[in-house]
Image 1 (cartoon, rainbow, N blue to C red):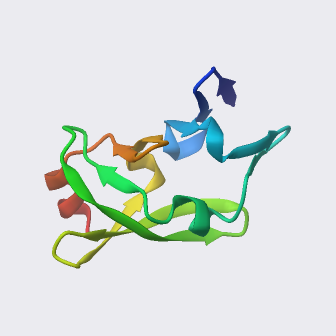
Image 2 (image 1 turned 45 degrees about the horizontal axis):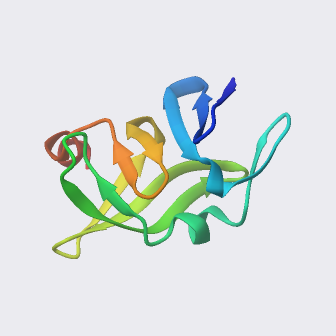
Length: 109
């Protein structure tokens, strides 16, 4: 299911629940969503914040399976790498906002 509004494209299917994807990333919406470039390039460098607005790190890479974006690789302030799965993401736009706290994210690592 894809729900469109003026600022975000809301993706709501499977385990990812409801992710708001900034329209600036979307090239086309038909029977699938087509991004404006490779996910690893368009999301690289975005800041990631947790559910309370605390800075987590910066996206360094993506993990994809074919046409499916599985997770993001985030470098934290100490230089460590974290894996953020799609089900933990609430919004992807100017920054990536998580639906979990930093502590919850650390527990999943």
